[in-house]
Structures are given as structure tokens and as C-alpha cells.
Image (cartoon, rainbow, N blue to C red; front, side, top):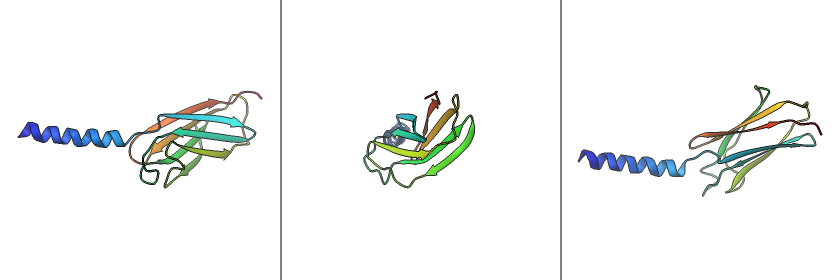
Length: 113
């Protein structure tokens, strides 16, 4: 009986873990004063399972936090942020957090034009 209970509990956990996942990849790019963040996060229902928070850090200091209540596509969340105050060598780190489970970070070092 104990083994059956543990098996059922384990199966439920695995089922939940299969549905809940962070972004698989976070791509950060910069062009013409705009920072683009693409969080690859494939879901079945973008209103139920989505990237809920994006935090942008510049040189280790929080620059901007954005929160969401749905994802803009079933494949990914893409956001564009005005980012005019940069200099060569700045390190931009973007942390994305899933509303179900986990987070994933992407990084970009600003290079000379």
C-alpha cells in the first residue's frame, strides 16, 4: 500500500513538472536604443502558463521590472524596452520567471556600434 501511495504521489509530481517549466532560452539583443528580450517558452495555453515577470539588470543593478498576466504567443514572450542610456561594456542581464515554475536568465554585453 505504501509503495502504491508513493508511486501515485511521484506520478502526480512528474505530471506537474512536465507542465511547469521555465523558458528554455532567453535571448537579449540591443539595437537603436531598444533592448529586445525573447524568452523561448512553449506552452499549450498562454493565458494559464506564461512568463509572469521579467527583470532587467544593468551592471548588477535592477533597471526595470515588468509583470505579465499572459504570454503573447504559444511559443515565446517577446518584449521591447526603451534602453537609450547605455555605454560600451555595460552588462545587461535579464531574468525571466514562469508563473508555474522556475526562471531562466539571458545576458548581453553592449558592444561598440
